Image (cartoon, rainbow, N blue to C red; front, top):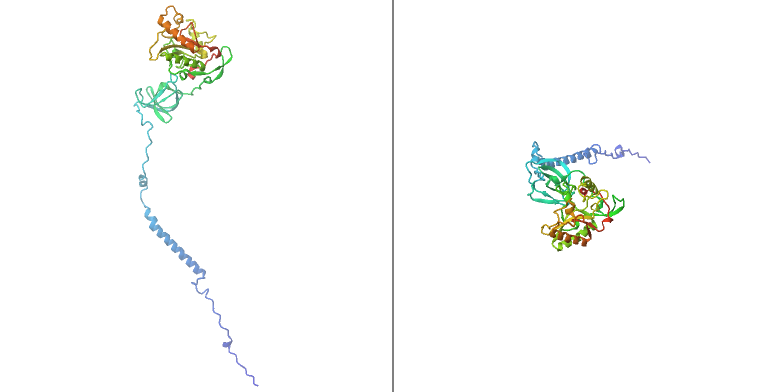
Length: 371
């Protein structure tokens, strides 16, 4: 058999052509890096346009270009002015202001209040009262007055009551302490108190704190009456007894510092037998003696041998031949009340009375100004 040869067709034998990928040829294809970059720029452009739009609509209208910034300050509220601390006071025309001077109040009469005034005048309104050792700050002066600050209050105080420097410490003897007797050297209990704090209604008229006293010279720096606590309690009993009969005590002397007794002895020792010896001290140095008279509650004087303390030994004596009957009766009455209260009398001085327990207390030398 004849072998038939079939002529192969080149065309038939070719395989189908492979399609080329359009990855590189189509630049807008969604997988193309270039397309991604383009789309990013478009998004950023939209965001930027939106940002500009927001600025144009909401921000730029509130900016005042070219406007004077000083006008903004003018629209702020005006602050309240600093208040005048002296606004409620009547300031004198001759006031001289000073730098702040720390000071304190000290009266000539112990316990006497010092008034803070609205104006530099005794007749001015009183703002408040101050007592010894209150701290004040001097702000100025006008004549006899000082403009001061006390806590948050301003006002005027008499300059004579204003002191500078450290406030003196109150002696420990205002407590119950042991004090060495200056004569014997023996320690004894002592507790000085202000008589006015214990004896209600008593009139304190300390003679040696006055210029016109029986010695002729002032010996005490201040008007103050101190006694031992138990002695003051006895005087309180006497005051109550006097009050029942319509009288009250006038106190001429109480505790006397030993140094004052020494000064008096040196100055007047040769002029009267009534001057205490500095070598022995006195019972007044112990705070156990009082020199008194009495008056009626309405202030009427009671007749006594003398109008006050004296260096005349004859007139001072409890038994004096020239003493009239009224004075003698009044001395007898006063002495009887004082004995009943726990005091003993002195033959040399009708006005002098000692606590019956005087020997149990020490001779002391505490400056009256320190109290």
